[in-house]
Length: 210
Image: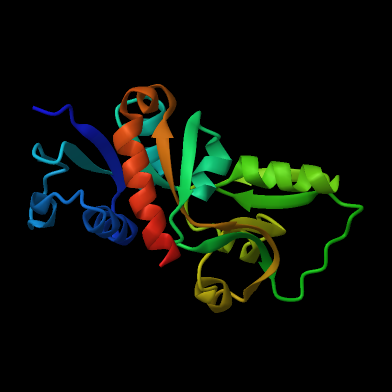
């Protein structure tokens, strides 16, 4: 029996898109499409084992070697800087990391800028590059209400359509970096499974170019 390649997929719509790409690349696992609450699915004939994990946890599973490869957003890779190989931009799950503020906001450089965000490292790096003095307020929930309630001056967050911002009288004042889903690999496991990982990467690359 083949040694299985462990693949961490992000739960949700993005993960379903990613799985469809893997299946099209010849690494299908039909049991994953059954309507049940299982989290781990195997296809021993093709030598693959998929499992669903929270999107923000994919990089941890890959970095620690529980998964050989996985798919994580560029936002997670920038924020946590896990020690993994980034193999391919899958060109899906596209959005951007941006700075947003209440409509009409004017930045006063004499004051410390209060920044609410889930992405403290990305925000810190961004403002450090500008030499701007900031106070980071780390939040885990709805970031959009921070400026409305006067907790922060601006927010740094992922913006997809901008609808939530609009509905809360906020707008993007600056884009920090474009975000999309990336194929990543565990550094040690890659050495032993490079042949199959390279095959998958090539097949997925053909789809991103198509």
